Amino acid sequence: MGKEKNIPHVVITAMNRYSYFQWFILGFYYLEKEGKIELSFKVRSLYERLSFLNRSKLMTGFRRYAVKYGINLRWLFHFSNNLEGYVLFDDEKRYFCIDSNDNPFSFDSELLDKVSVYYKMQCPKDFSEDGFHLTDDVVIPWIDQNIERNPKKEKVRKPCKNLFKNIAKIRPLMVGTRLMSRGNAFRWLDESFQNSMASSSVTAEKKMMCYFGNAQGPVPVKNDPADLDREAQIVGYFGDKTNHPNEKRAKAAKIMRGMGDKYDARVIDETEPGFKNRVSHPELVVPIDRFCGHISHFQYNLNISGYGMSIPNRFIESFLVGTAIVTDRLSLRWYKPFGSEVVETVPMGYLPMDQVNWEGFEKDIKNLPDVDKTTVLNAFNEKWHPRKVAEYILEEVLKCNNEKTDTMKKI
Picture 1 (tube, rainbow, N blue to C red):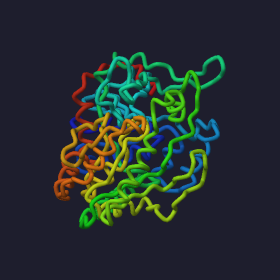
Picture 2: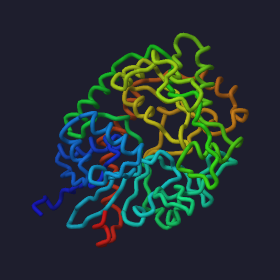
Picture 3: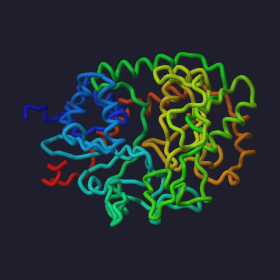
Picture 4: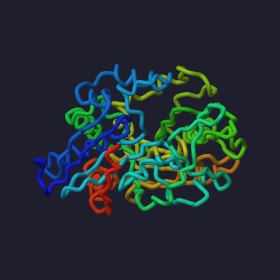
C-alpha cells in the first residue's frame, strides 16, 4: 500500500459532529508531524470533506437547520454522534470509535459489536447491572443510541442489550474544548489551541468564578415510555425525584455573589424555561475566543454536573490556562485520574434541592487552598494535552486483541 510498515496509519472515516472531536484530531496531527503515525481522512459526507477546505459558518448553520427540521440530506451529512476510524498496522485493520453522546448511559449497539475499541467521552465510573444511577433513587437503564419507532410512531430507544458482552472494549476518554475552529485543517486547529494557551501566563488574582448558561432546566415532558436520551423527558418522567442541575447552578452562583469581589458568578439566562432566543444578561456573555483568557484570572472554576451527570468543556478550558476545578461529586471519569486540579464538594447533579448539603458546599468553597498554577499546567501537559490523548487512543487500539473480520467494511 506504499505505507511504512512499522508506522501506524490512522484513518478517520466519519466525524460529522466534528466540534466534539477536534481535540483528538489535533492530537493526531501532532503525532503525524512528529513522524509517529500517518494520518488520513476518508470521510463520507460532503459536509465533512468541506470542513478541511473552509471555515464558513454557512455549512455549520445549514447542518443545524437540517437536524432541527428533520431534512434528510444523506448525501450532505452523515448523521452520527460518533467518530469512526481504524488503525492500519502490520497489515491489520483495528477499528475504533469515539462516542460523543452527552449522556453516559447511551451506547451505539451496532458499533459496540463491530469495533475493537469503543471510547466513551462521558464514561461512567461504574457499570451497574441495573443501569446508571442518576441519584441514589433514580436509575436509568443502559440504552441504545439508535432510534426505533413504536406503533404510535414515536421515537423510542431500545435497551442496549449487548453492552456487557462488549464491556471489555469500552475505554474512558475525555472532553476537549468547545468548537476550536469551523474548519479542520491543522493550521486552524493549532492556531486556536495556541491562542488559548497564551492565557496560561496570566496571574490568577481572583479566587473563583462560575459561568452557567441557564438557571432552570427544560420544560418537563411527561411521556410514557420516556425517551431517556431527552433531558426534558427524564425530568418529566421522574418528576419530584429529581431537580435539574441548572437550579443548583443558580443557587450556587447566588452563594458566590455574597463572598466578595474576588468571586465572579455569572448565570446568563434566568428566564422561565421555554423562552427561545432570549438572554437575560447579554452583558455577562464572554465570547468563546476570549473565554480561556477570562478563566485564567481565577484560581478556581466551579462546575455542577450537567446533562446525565456529564463532565463539560469547562474542565479542559480551565486546565489549559492553569485554573483548577471545584465540582459537585463526580459520577464519571476521564482516561486518567484527576489530581489536585479537581476538588470535589457535595453531591448535587439531579438531587432534589432539599437534599443538597448547601451548608457543606458553602463551607467547602470558603476554605479552598490557594492554587499553584504551575501544578495545574503540569498536570495538563502530562495528561490532557491533545498529543497525550492521541497517544492514549493509539496505544489502546494497538494493544487490543483484534479479530480479523470482513463485517467492518460496512463502517
